[in-house]
Length: 68
Image (cartoon, rainbow, N blue to C red; front, side):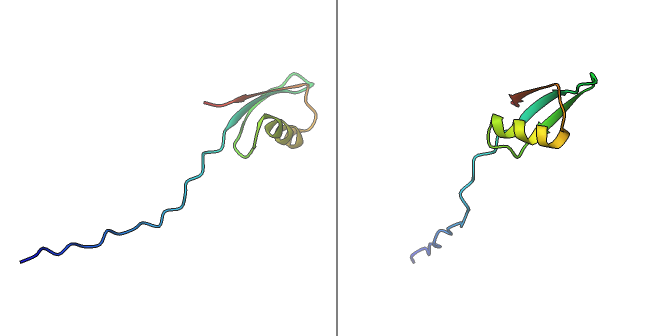
């Protein structure tokens, strides 16, 4: 008697995309207040900076770093 073998199932998996980088922005306002922001939808550092400035408006300084 011969053993029956089942055909291997092929899983239709979507190719996984590389995770988008996450950035952290430290913002200092002209009145001395400060804030931290986590940016997940930016393509690069320049894009993250633009997103923060467009969100908060007038700032004295912005420091952005890649979050590990």
